Amino acid sequence: MTHVSIRELTKVYPGSADPALDGLSLEIPTGELTALLGPSGCGKTTTMKMIAGLLAPTSGDIHFDGRSVLSEKPEHRGVVMVFQNYLLFPHMNVADNVGFGLKMRKVPKQEIDHRVKEMLELVKLPDLGDRQPSALSGGQQQRVALARALIVQPNVLLLDEPLSNLDAHLRFEMRDLIRGLQQEMGITTIFVTHDQEEAVVLADKVALILDGRLKQYGPADVFYKRPVDEATARFFGGQNFASGTSDGSVFKSGLGQLKLPDGVNPGPGKLTVRPENIRINAGENMQNSLQAVVTERVFLGTQTLVKLQVGNEKLDAIANPNEVENISVGDSVTISLPPSSLWVLST
Amino acid sequence: MVGKESFSIRSIRVLSGAVLITWLILPLVPLAIWSFAKGWFFPDLLPKRWSLQAWEYALSDLSGVMDSLWLTVWISIAATALSILVGIPAGRALGMYKFRGKELVELLILAPTIVPGIAVVLGIHSVFISMGLNNTINGVILVHLIPTLPYMILVMAGIFANYDPSFEAQARSLGASSAQTFWYVTLPAIMPGIIVGGLFAFLVSWSQYILTLLIGGGRVVTLPLLLFNFATSGRNDITGAIGMIYILPGVIILLLTAKHLSGRNGAVGGFGRI
Image (cartoon, rainbow over all chains, first blue to last red; front, side, top):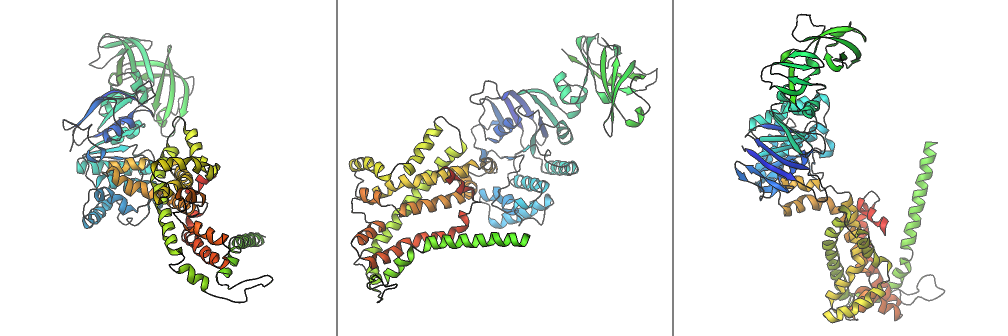
């Protein structure tokens, strides 16, 4: 139950000229699940370690409920970090691992046993208390690590790449488990990931960090509909960009004149449209319809990527394979860019 | 074919085991026989007369063997404990961190295993005299650290080279203080190194002669010094009895810890550097 406020947090490692993290400010409300998203080396793990107290910031401050925690030792912050490789203590069995935090707090043994049992049931591993960590699968190890963190009822839970080591079918199971427990216990949770899909499926809000700086912070859909710049759009799979000028309602570019949604400022900019929002073989009477030539098609399994040429501009479209079955390279097709799917990035 | 191959490998193992045991045990047999002999002269294969006199003397207060035994045990335990205390942080620094002059530090730590002890101790002797440490048990314990520390530090450096400090961060994050983290997380992880390094330190200290003789000034009479006195005085029977007592800790330690000394133990890897 803690509101986390990160203020101008900066970390410069000794012997390095560039800051690993450069003036990050974030407000993370009580009980929310927030993703710090960015490529490896962008400073997200550094941020987590500073929140956990395992690393001292070069400058800036971290507040929990309005109170600075920088001077507090890691064991007094009420922050538990679950590392990417789980770090179950190899010389203890599962139950001793889960009970570790309570033992350090000198909780009576009987109560520890009781709560460990409860916690193992919560993560759906009720019978594995006697096992050694090395005898568990990756998914089971992660659940033990999660149980070990949650049993101390932390104010803030930090997760390092919680889904990235798991198979596809385990990911959703684990996602549901993490979200379920987090909502039930109302713990403010921050996790870091380099995988935008992981961020989108798990988080209430996403903070995109590129080159040590916060690019954009908000609910996941905003990154698809209203990215702040080309780098952000590209990180979320945006591929189509056309330079031109907006007059507030129409955008003029190499793609011709396209009607814009409300809320776009006039001036020069870059038009962007997500590949999955381009409609191929649309009727002539659709808004923003264009003539395009198919230059390449790539079958992706559940989708088909269709590369298009419109005048001098290139567009990538992703379509349902059935809908583009009859289209082949060299064909001329009518496409439509619905105004609600367009967005203009300031340059 | 497979059966034959495993058979020949087995026979090689049995043979090499037998050679090793013979090599280690055989030299001790005459010692054991002497300790029960009342005169043993050429060309007799075995003594003509047997006696427990040598053992009676060795175990009596008169000979000072028991006093000397406890003194030696105390000195070796103290030297081992100090080696562990110094070896853990030193091994951690050498095994986990890169720093300027690391090679020089490693060379200096290894030096006592290369330079003869007598060369080292002549220099230290004058320093110890000025500090009032010569002719004292404490001085002997301190000087034993010279040969024991290289083993301890290199074993611990080997352990820490394969050690993941993230476990400590994890423990802190779960609410352990730094002392609790050391006790519950670090110590169990490095225990194999402490056992192996400690055993070597104990045995190295146990077998010191020159360092004890020079720094102890003849007042600190450990078992090897006593043994040497009897050996040079020609009392082969008493030498045999004391010799048997002297090798006891080595045998006990070897039997108790044989499994820790297998090649699979990461701690033994540190010896590759010696």
